[in-house]
Length: 192
Image (cartoon, rainbow, N blue to C red; front, side, top):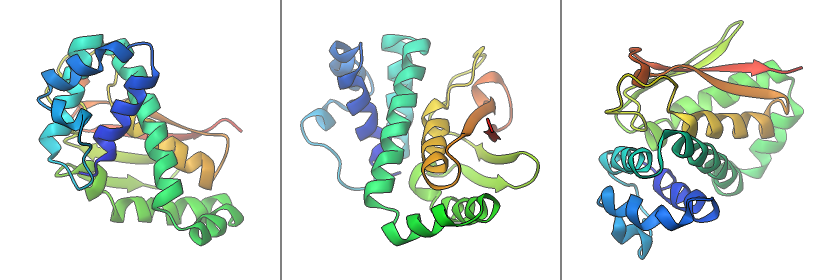
């Protein structure tokens, strides 16, 4: 998986109210070395799972979800600044919403290996556009959760959609494997 899944969590932790927990979180995940030598290449997806498990264990689920949101937003910002070419961004912003959304969904699907690892990923268009993730590395191992845990993904998708398609859009995780569902499903909703 891309190193953003680790780098942006560290960045969000450092900037958040639990900054003092960063060493404990990364040590518990077996990733303390990344605090001094940040990854620049793809990382093992098991490291991403271990990091999110450690995050929930050390700072609690509520705070871990908030860190996931910030890390996802930072990932979206990174992708906009470094991975999605400016001309493509201009084109998407100029297109009608339904066309921009369709093009962006296809691009996300083509690059899913960078954020989903071995998890299955697909999109559905229709009255409710959806992102579907089977085998999410973020919530892997969590069971019987009363709330969805893949805030990292929801926030990343939402940041990209708000910047490139519709400033009023929201991405909500409506089911999560951590709650006993077979897949994690994220719905694209418009406040407009």
